[in-house]
Image (cartoon, rainbow, N blue to C red; front, side, top):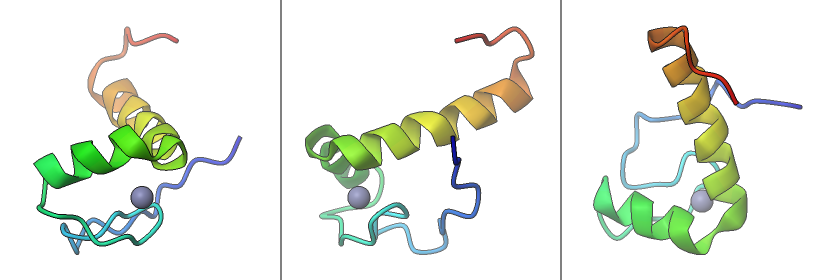
Length: 60
Ligand SMILES: [Zn+2]
């Protein structure tokens, strides 16, 4: 399983997973992953990584 830890968050109006332009930072990204399963999957993995760092009790 490859987890993309090099996602580019420096450009908040583009999806860091596919590069698509977002309608807005934040909310636009949520809408985007809602309609893109691949990006949602990437986001879930990315978020799980962050959560794993912050909360040691996180388990799948
Ligand atoms: Zn995307």
